[in-house]
Image 1: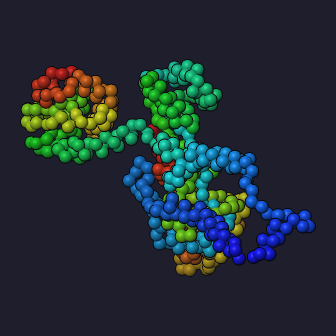
Image 2: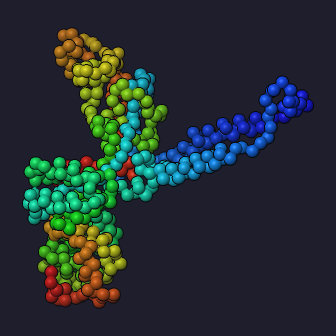
Image 3: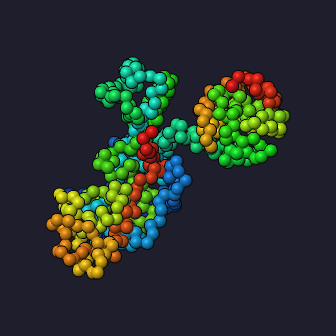
Amino acid sequence: MKTGFSIFLATFVALGASWSGFVLAPLLQLGGAKQTVILQSTDNWPQQRTGNATLGLQVYRAYGCAACHTEQVRQTGVACEVTLTSLGVQQPADFVAFVRSLFALPELAAYTNAMAASLDGWNGGLPKTLLTCPDKDVASAMADRLKAAGIKSETSIVAIGPDIARGWGFRQSVAADYLYDQPVQLGSLRAGPDLANIGVRAPDARWQLQHLYAPKSITPGSTMPAFKFLFEVRQVGAQPAPDALNLTGDFAPPAGFEVVPKPEATELAAYLLSLKANAPLYEAPFTPVTAAK
Amino acid sequence: MSDENKSSSSPAGGEPTATRSAAPMWIVVTTLVLLCIGGYYFDQHGGWFDAHVYAPYSSAEKLEAYQPQSGAAAALARGKKTYEAVCGICHGADGMGKPAQFPPLAGSELVNSAGVNRLIHIPLAGVNGAIQVEGKDWNLAMAAMGAALPDEDLAGVLTYIRTSWGNKGGEVTAEEVKKVRAELGGSPQPMTGPQLMKMPE
């Protein structure tokens, strides 16, 4: 065994290198993650789950929801949008002529077609998104030119990606989002939609419960299995239960019966409502959507 | 152990032999080239292990550049912060001042004026002696509190003052502040009330 020590050393280095890469480096990078502050706000992100939502994470885990649902929104790019808020003294027609005069600028060459198309048939309604481009400098140069011409505009940051185009979020998921998930339910297969911000898309607990009981009653083509065992079908007592589902048609229980969620269903619904990855963070910036001015 | 030695050096039977020889030069060169390319790629896209940098942002600087700053709102928020740190101690966070000591800014005709020339002079030069605000006489010295602020910050403060607490003034730009600062020169004397009122608005 002259080479015994060499074999030990080689094994140690090989395993140690992968351990360093897969365990140590991520720990050093993200192990100290703490609550962060939401951009342009004083609120913290993320918030610790409370009560039913905490229990709901374990229900979500127990029924293998992560087998068909992910909780991670992907982002492929970022863009700046220049949105007009006021034309000042200019008439829309003058303004369009002014923008067309800018088309000669070499920096705008890549965006002239899109801008021309968006200005076609524009009736002067505001706010109006004029330019969408990935280059921040081009966008701010455009905003400066508009300002010099007495036109007010706002430059907003928007995240771009297939998931975001599907309406599954405003930005990509980042490590901070999962700070209080134990365990993290990332998921890897999307038989169903991503749930990273389902609490924003469907903020109604009754909707969530009905969808769990009979997905097809809400989305006719849904392939999601009905989780009927999370509910109790029972005879209506002296008064209907306040949390009975409001079902109609084929999905309604027989006359004199009502569908009432068991505690597990309520917990799962509370967990789903707690999934709200909608806060702009330093590591995933975007301009929050505000009411149109 | 000696058997091992013998077998590796045995020429018989056409068995392969292990010998010590230098690695071919092309492997060394290729490895070094790949390392260089990898290192360059990491430097350009990796963000140097920064916990905040995720793709598609390739570096901390790129990420910083895309932080949202919606012009007017961001300036106003900054102006409020500066106001509360610099001006609010005397004039109050609510802009009401203190009776018989510090004049209010809310509703003040100097703040709500059409032009901003006089208003910019006050924090840049300071005020000394009697002055009339909202029909009352005030007699107190105000130091040039805004002289040390950058133009953008002072403009932000004045914009905040002119648009808060029911005031109906417009925006104050950094250029306007810069212009007045240049007119006043290095170390201006505090203005008196009549001096201020003689100036264009």
